[in-house]
Image (cartoon, rainbow, N blue to C red; front, top):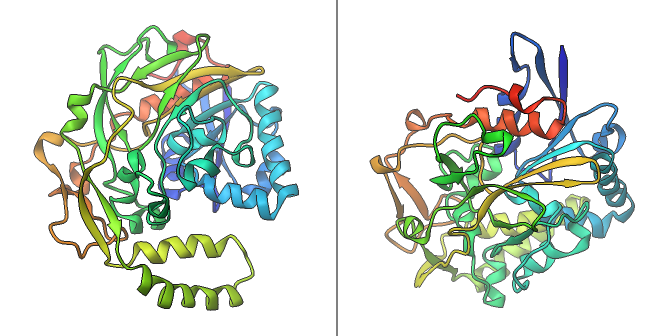
Length: 377
């Protein structure tokens, strides 16, 4: 029996709505009559430094990450952050595989577009990187409402923030994003046995992945006309005076009781999201991603890396039977969602791409021949 040992990074810095799906899909999965077996272990920040070694694990999974908090960790605890990032660097250089989805790619990739917003500047900083791959990200990133001060456009990230941050924080995140059909590269081992040229996947605000020549593009986003059916408006925060006077005061009291410096910035943004002070503008949010690569594979040292803008670990649904809508009035909040899918319930959501996650991991491990990757379907 060949065992593929997988580490899934968990903790304060990774959204639980992403990492739990990986665990459910992978842990204990066997194929070829038990010849291959995947075993999963969760690693927090300290476990990663101590245990993430090529002798113990074959693949590390980077779920949707909050690189803003990782940047702050690098600022407030530079020694611990250096050890953590260096551990990841060493693991991949020595042959460990990586599967990183959506914002998880920010740990390894610089932006192709010039950073304009506060979020883009921090995300592009070396402080927030474990190491730097050749692939670049074409991505507008904005944390509402604070990037609004700089005139930042929420871009692709609006499809996360506008769809209900209460479910993101609680770990549910059931209905965010859009199911889209991506064009598949069936020449790559991960998709070689797939019978169709397109696959329905879940996109939740991820970037376009711009690789160099030696990297493999595994999937492409659809064209602009497809995304035109899911356009949303930019919303602006209108309660700055109230926020500064009341909410900020409450958070300063919170800081006196709580000594973790990373808790305050997260609480500051969360409390602003809860305010019913969001006003819809006439501006349609532009997207960079149409026709660009959505999944890329490359190598770093001796390790294989799979980067995916979309979330193959998440369920999808039939978009012809529901509609993406915005709330009608200006009393909505980011906490409760200002963008939602009408009449979408959990029973209408189907897990159709679990096989893709398993093949990503098996390929990245380097332990499974292409013809013996997990079955599709």
